Length: 243
Image 1: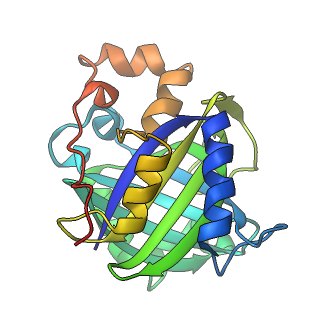
Image 2 (image 1 turned 180 degrees about the horizontal axis):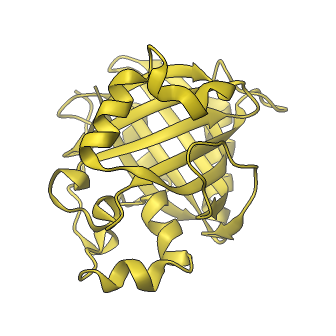
């Protein structure tokens, strides 16, 4: 379990944060590029025919099911992400890319198929973005920083086939910064330093919700019910002190 805090920031500030992070933190062990900290994240987000996940109805507002691929790897993660009070719990298993059409029969996909069937979930949106990831072992445990930019989406997703890369760009003027650290009552000292030096304010930043709002499906989705605007809800700021 980890604590996850998100920040929606202008691209200019994102560049400054990355410059700082590349001096103060270590590269992600799986990263590529000049600084060995970059990769492409691709996900298929699942929802019900009545958009229960987007509308945050009951337990659908706390759990997201998605299928994730990194860069050009030939394997996928079948993932369930539970989030409450900033604390994230994940369960995920892997299958080969070419096994997606028959994941229901895969030993690692049986649990996933059961959950999707119970919750009536189907592919709803493909999202991809460029991620930079840095990390640092601190006195409070491992602190992980990710910066996501160049976001694209595609709502024309056929079950159960992996779509091609690309799509419609969204969130063109901002980046999503995430700080992830062990479950604790206190923000790690290094994370506090980042927040203070760059005057960051935490808040919700759901890529799936932003993508659907930007899509041609927005009116159809919002017509089903009054929108729950998570971007307007107050967010409890973690204590800015070292444990």
